[in-house]
Length: 70
Image 1 (cartoon, rainbow, N blue to C red):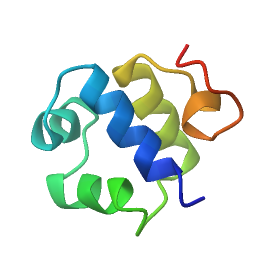
Image 2 (image 1 turned 180 degrees about the vertical axis):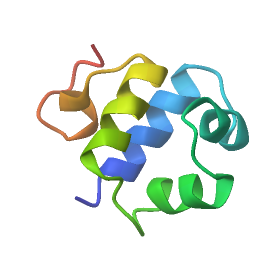
Image 3 (image 1 turned 90 degrees about the horizontal axis):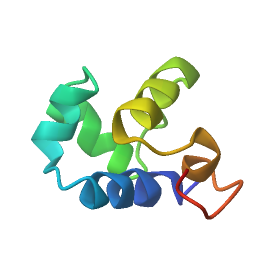
Image 4 (image 1 turned 60 degrees about the horizontal axis):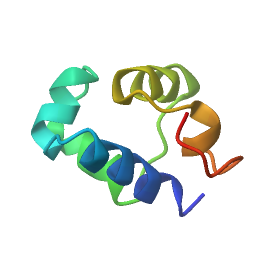
């Protein structure tokens, strides 16, 4: 899923957060957040769900199942 990191980054930017703020909001380290956004690591399903909730987007959007953010 090479697009997952791009979608996480896009959702973060829409929310007006920098990477460190988003990492803190989602309870992950900034270095791990960077790995998610650069598509070098995929978050486990529970973390993905938490990211979607905190960034106020749907998990379906992050997973590329739909283009609508909600």
